[in-house]
Image (tube, rainbow, N blue to C red; front, side, top):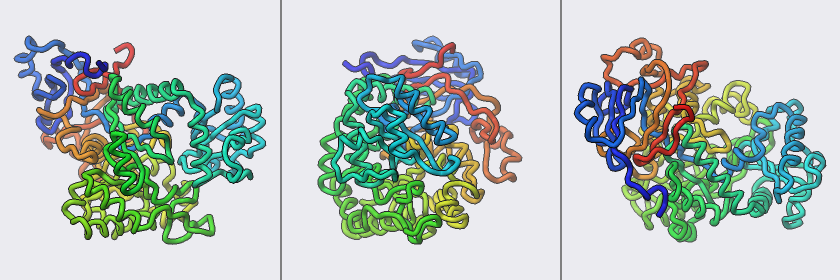
Length: 538
């Protein structure tokens, strides 16, 4: 029997803290029973429960919130980044090469060396490593290094020797099909033990950050069927975060495969285009720093066929779409599917669009009309936005300022589900909420409360559950306990912020996420009433 179901969860009373609950904005206590929230209320009423529970937790002023849901994760790749070579903070090409040498020397038994996170756009000189430099740094061993957006990679000669000769052998980063081929070869060289080590590391790290659920975005061009099913099996056995799996394969074949693999939908990273950093996101107008407008992987007709097939099968469809032309193709395709199978059925299916960075007023309205979920990553703006960021270099300042319009989506009634796309950006839920509330483009900012909802309840709604991601009686007992300082009701409008600490507002407070302030520290994470993480020393 699995660890998750070996013993029934305890009945627990948490008291003397702050419980973030719409059921009682002043709650200081909560009772959990049979894996669900049983009661939320005041300290005075908590005494009545103390004798009938298995455990009493003294919160000592700590904050209790729903556990976060990260709506877009590549779990094994995240674990490999945690256990492998991380170049995301390498300040230069020379520093990156030095780290590669050290990593290769430290892991003499690995059949393939794996690394992630390089971003030549941030390095002096602006160029990635050459193949000769990688060969020297690794001592001639197979090496796969994915760019930070995971849409291109550089590799060593020894890895190229494992793939068909048709893969280009110049020094340009590999993209599209060539990238998929070398990634498949690199991941195929990982042993099952290495893979499980990575998956365990990723899930444990998520739990330590107060994340109770992750949406795994797998697919034949991203991972493998063995990787996907092994992860779902491991998550079912481990006391840890829930894993909801999506398998990105197209139309009728995708529907059958999603069912076979136990996926929630034929969705996730079903690529309509690529990424801005790799010049593969599909645009209506050419890039500011390249003489083309990216690459379309799916047209509206292919989108329509996939959405219709998924809707008929009762599964979610979903697409990776970043550029404005790709997002337009998705909206047009979903609209065509709705004309075929019925708008009400399409809306009820809650089909998803991952990333959805370059939106127009027309595509925002299309999302609202068609009931599409916007599965978005605010950390992208924190990392690449601003007047001097990668977005501005790729698109020019005017187009860059239109990206990630969270406020416009909310105003239109489009459901938001926040995620990280880890390992593209790190698992960092409070940092994600902060990034949305303090967007680099002020008109796209949303309140901390709205951002928090998108990162908790929004992820559950994105999988068709409206009864979870919130601490009210009857909801799943997925929660996290935090050490933090003052609670406020933050909004992007200063006129609202003036009364943000007034308890008479009747709105549950959240941590002050003003940039420069320390983010909350997770003390405990509980999933389904079972503790999956306790910070050492607590």
